Length: 255
Image (cartoon, rainbow, N blue to C red; front, top):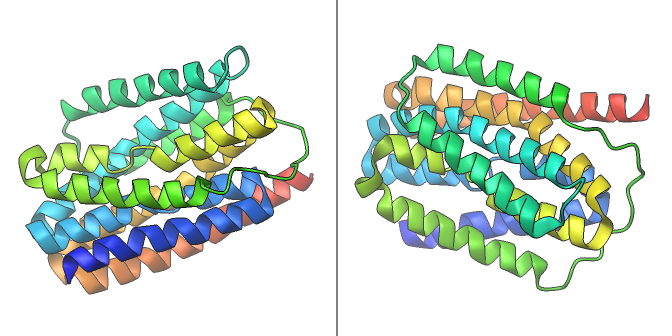
């Protein structure tokens, strides 16, 4: 039953978000990609497989791992001014794994981690380059969405199966690996240009405040209140924060 859920949940979420992003453009696509498409299912399955104490610790490290994701977005943006997607992607991945390596040696209290990550996101949004160009029609290949769904399933199965070996800290830090952000950024840069890729990645960072809020709630409550209550409250908080970020993103985009 658990295997069936793993094979069903993430591919369906990725498929729906990919279709929506294709319809509304890169900025909205980036905002949607910042939803918890793989990391939330990973933590859910870890709670079921490994227990709520394991999941609570992993969720705290997943929260901290958003620093690595934001660093990927920032580095990719600046490299995209001079390089194509292969170099930009590798540079972004290098930033992600370098920060993950540093974070693996750091143990911080949960609330302090939350404050540090919020501050880091604010700084990244300040120094990220802005794109003033208008969205254009997205024309990715037909196999784009099935590829994302396949990769999502493989990633979740692999990480959750290896969790007992990796432990809660490294499992949590690797859970937010920017797999779908990478796919969307690469296709956007290849088919539409670097300017729209930078808008996409900025939207990913702007939407990451939802990510931080969700995993703060999970880490605080999953071992105390159980899986259903913790995830229910976390989803509610995430919906409020993500809706607010969409409003602010739309407001500043039109002004």
